[in-house]
Image 1 (cartoon, rainbow, N blue to C red):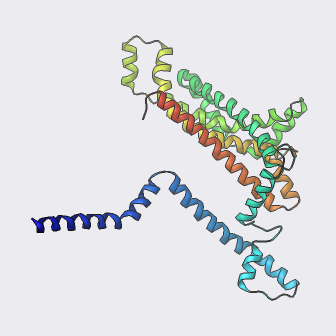
Image 2 (image 1 turned 90 degrees about the vertical axis):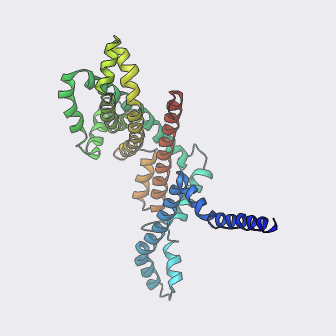
Length: 318
């Protein structure tokens, strides 16, 4: 009896030892199973690559600075110098963070030097262009799916419209609309709309055509009207395509709003911050505006993702 108890205890202890030895691996697998782990790892890798690029790109100017000052330097002093330049070729991540802190936290949101103020200006034209572009894409897709003549005549023009670079179109749109008195928000939103309607239209055409012929025949067997077929079958099938395209479109809409601010010499918006930084050689300011734009885009895409999960949950999807 005593031997059996001892044997069982040893067996249990061995199991605990084995399980404990695998705890770090299990924790790592759990961390990487979600989205937070891979995103964190990629951010760390990008930051490391960023710092390496800072050292290599800023080293020539720093060496020249040491030589002009007739100063001897060590490797560590050279590395430190590349990360402390006022107008570097590539600013270090901590320099960008300091600039973001100064322009986001320390500045009043109504100040012209506040990135919050400039982000709000760009966001307004982004959302207006995204809304109008998304609706335009949906209406075009519905027309193409239900009208054969539109499918043959309109689809080639939709595809061809995206072959023209937006940098060539933006100045013309700004000048033409400015000639008729439309300035500010409207021209920028139109350029955003021009960019973001395309992925919505293409994805919705595919989504509205995704139901199987057997499903369509079944709806006809039940004497369903065209509106019932559309809302009960086609629209439900197209929702996954719609949300995927909206995530792409909202990011493109932000790019369109920033591009639209460049040829106008805008006094407000992230595009104006990029222009001012390029005029005066303030690379840190340029990178801070780019980081602010990327954070804004990530937030908009995440917001659409939240709406997508809520909609699918209400529809009973898992």
